[in-house]
Length: 157
Image (tube, rainbow, N blue to C red; front, side, top):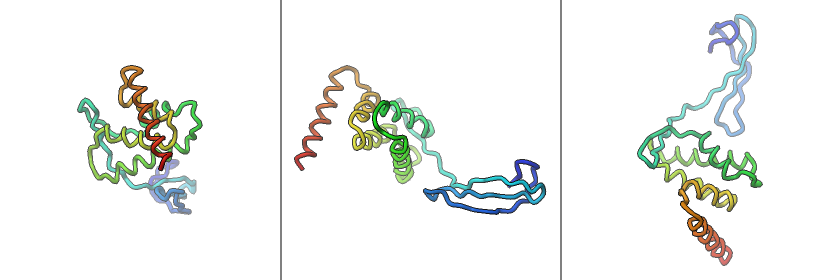
């Protein structure tokens, strides 16, 4: 590892720590030439997930783009960023476990909606309205009726 201060590659690891979720190792290093200390992070290289869009285009999975969409759906709702980050972690883990190199955006949208449905009904309907491209108020009404029916059937169980 090259020292960011003097550019030499001779250094030693002083301390190593695992992140809370055990996915990253943080290492404190000391340069043997200039004696300055610096931090490096080691993580598993992830194979990129390709998304097949509705129009057939392919693009790499972009966690920030998904976070923004979920964030807009959750705007002004009592949903913490920790809950959203947990949803994103779970989603990304599920997508990687599929073991597919290309995943239809439809599958991702459905996974997000099912998770939002469990977290907050308003956020779910907001996300669904964009994802399913509601054309008019009737589309909202239909979705709300479906939501109410699922809640009443859950209550009777």
